[in-house]
Image (cartoon, rainbow, N blue to C red; front, side):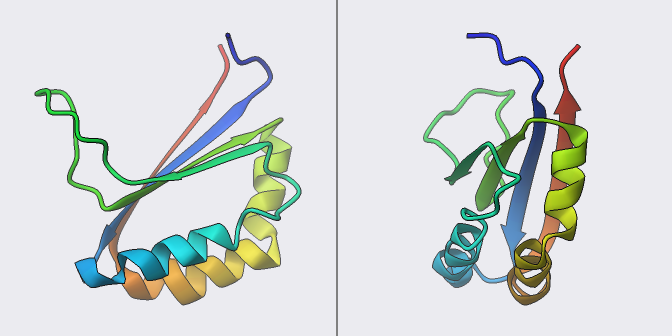
Length: 103
């Protein structure tokens, strides 16, 4: 199925301490009720090993939104702000975000 009218927000997290993985995942789960999110996937690297696959991250977050405006509202949502301040910033050494829209 071809996704239409979709803004994709994909985030990869690298932990400072690998033992904090469940804490970060718990923090990501606090994002689930945010109404601007159409779909959410919280994951860890799959056991796939091809030269083109980067499995160096610890946890990923994939969010689908109906529009850029919905994604912008998500960024300002108090729950997201708390997640960034209380989980992502203190627990992660690196965060990479990739946003894409339909062509």
